[in-house]
Length: 284
Image (cartoon, rainbow, N blue to C red; front, side, top):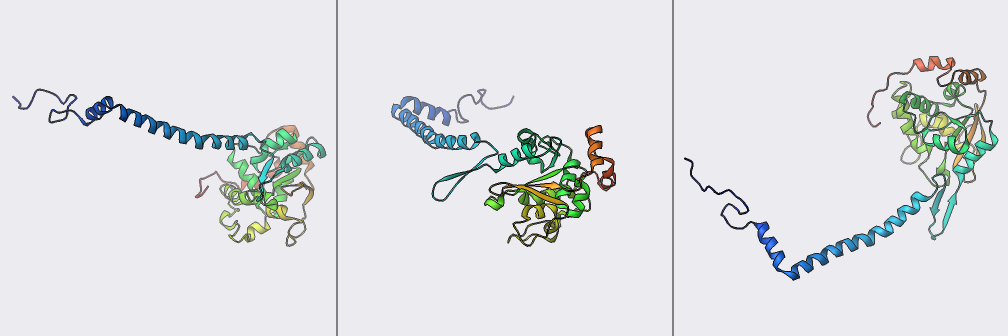
């Protein structure tokens, strides 16, 4: 038969003596001072974590408990300012526009426009149709002329977040290269690589000619030529939101939409034919 001991490893090592764990367990059991030291160390770790965690929790609570359409900014001298521009813009839409008005804005603000302004928006956070978001992006990053040819069949007003005019850079201009990438993933005439803002803040030629860039800076940047197809109707107190009225809105397309419900009016058929099935592109 095979040689060797019939005994298994059991609780002992290969040599038959106690394992390392057995030795540590025995030392811990027999030494009261060791148990106290380990307990104090654990309490110290928990206490230190609590000291750090409690103020962090209060800080986060203050941030997430504030209304998302109001912004609180802290100045260098420790004082705070509250910017109410978003609510101000939505209430202007609610009070100063016809009830059947349609508002074109990037999808991020769709729920706010619907809920606070009580106006129809072209897209919101529940818009899963990528091709529709691409068409919205195409309207914003195309030239004013090209954009108006589409927008006049979809919307009565255009709303932009322009917070960089008040020192907050994360606005629609910052998001616009992403809009161009989405548009370009469906519409081949949109070259997303040619749409960018340089490190020195200089826009590319395509961005400079885009509807979004022109609406963002119109009246605030003397280099922007007069608008032809859009009319500024409201800019909030701190220039964080701007609203434009679409000129020469197609009454026929608006009537078609009211009669048929969701869908694109026949006037956009040729534009939609230029689209391609969405394909994932690098960086999107």
